[in-house]
Image (tube, rainbow, N blue to C red; front, side, top):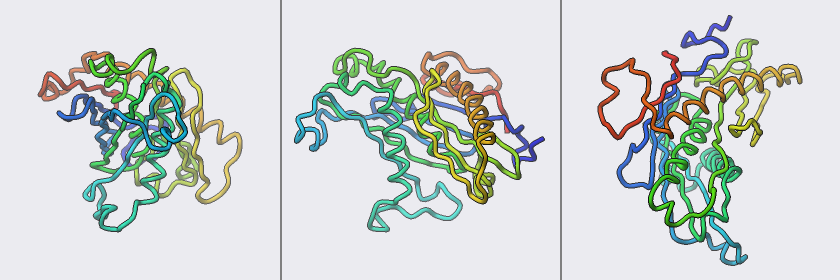
Length: 267
């Protein structure tokens, strides 16, 4: 049995919550929570493509992501990039991961000569921000595709299927799902798995922090990741379809335009 800080079982996700239409100005937006990790993911469109596409006379459009952590999202204040005078290397790596993950399931030709920007901003960090960013970005973009703007400016099937990500790892010798910060900081193995809804692998980031791990352990972690991802895809589907969430909190109907989805896991 797992002895986890938040008392979850080894194969149990944190409580997941997604609110759509969280911001007023973007084409679409969501606020996604994985336990105490919270991000805002917003979609905007520019009627132009990057200069490198124009130089190479590339057809179609482009989709990219920007990721950042607010200063107060961590216990010790996180300095803004503008204060450091240069982009944060970790943030650059994560935004590239989110961008290429979304592009793996998007038909860029269907975007026309447009650039889609997905902004993922961490407002509370407790581990798994890159995975939450991919999950939130996927929902936000699919909601944007339902907008009148997208129907006027995009053509065909823009997004082939949903995409999601989850972390797994070995903590105190035991494989566990969806690591929070306390677990991530002491994990013997830390792995992020990005997959499509049909079960295809987009990217795996796996690192042995203390000692190498075996193929058998890798397979066990992948099975654990797939178990969690199936639940995440179900939550995504419910939010996009606008289905009513479970009525286990009378305060959750605060705004009719907000749609919440829960994994049924309480911390």
